[in-house]
Image (cartoon, rainbow, N blue to C red; front, side):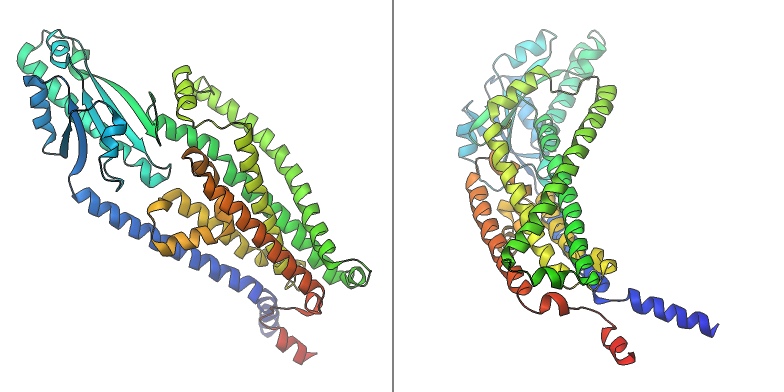
Length: 437
C-alpha cells in the first residue's frame, strides 16, 4: 500500500501543474462570467415581458370589423395608431429601444373579404436590428398579433355564419403578407426565414475558426515544446537568423498546414450536410421568393464581402498563433502543451457566446469594452456588420488586429532573443523537484 501511495503522489505531482490548473480556472471564470451575463439579459427580458408589448398599427379599412379588431389587441398590446402605410416613416417615429419593431397594416377591403367568405389580408412588417438569439425572440410578438387577429376572426365567422363556412376558413381566416426591414431596405420575406438564412451563412465561420486555431495552435506549440525538450531550439537560436523571422516562419507554416487540413474537412462536411438536408427537406437551396428577397434586402454577400470577411478571419488566426508562441514558451514538455493553449480557447469562446446571445449595440459599456477589446470578436462580428451596414466595425477590427498581431510578434521576438525561451517554466512542483535533485 505504501508503494502504491508513493506512485500515486508521483503521478499527481506530474499532473498538478500550473499549466493544467490555470487554464481550467480560466474556463470556470469564463463560464461564470457568461452565466452572469445571460442571467442579467434574462432579467432584462423578464422585465420587458411584464410590460404591454408595443404594436404599431395602421387601419386603412376603417370599418366596424377593423375597429373591433383594434379592440381585440388592447388586452395584450400597447397599440399606437398611424395613418401612414410607409414602414420607414412609421419606424422613424418610434423609439429605438428594441421593443417597437412590429408594424401591422389592415388594408382597405378587409371587411369586404370577410363578408365574402375569403381570407382577410393583413401586412406584418418586422424591423430586424441584429441576428442574435435574444433578438430572434422578438419575432414572436408579431406572430402573437396575427394569432390574436385569427382567433377573433374565427369567433366572428362562427357567430355569424355558424357551420355554413368551410372548416379551413374558420381555422385559418387570415392571409398574412410578411415583410422584413433591415436598415433602410425592405423585402417580402419572413424574419424567421431571414434568420435561418443568416445562421446558415454564419454557421461555418465559428467552426472554421475553432478548427484552424486548434490545429495550428497544437502544431505550433507542440513543435516549440518538442524543440525545447530535444534541446534543438538552442541550436536554432544560435544561428545568425533574425528572431522575428523565426517566429513568423513558425506561425505561417502552422497556419498554412492547418488551413489546408480545414479546407479538406469543410469540403467533405459541406457535402455531408448537403446530403442530409436534401434528404430531409427535399431542397438544399432557398425558395425562389426567399432568394429574391434576400438579394433585395442585401443580406446575400458578394465576392468582395467574402474577401473582407476572410481577411478578418485570417487576421484572427494570426493573432491566435502569436499568442500561442508566447504561451508555448512556458511549456516544459509536450505533455503540458494542451493545457497551455486552453486559455486561448477560452478567449475565443467568450466573444462567440456573447455575440450569439447579446445585442452588442445595446450592451453595457463594460461588456462592449470586453467584446471590442478582444481581437477574436471581430470574425464573429464580421457577417452581421456587413449585413447591417457597419463596415466601419470591420475596418477598426482589422486595424486593431494588425496592431495586436504586431505587438505579440514583437513580444515573442523579444522572448526568443532572451533566455526566457529556454528557462521559462510554470511548474507547480518544479521547485520541489529541483530540491530533490
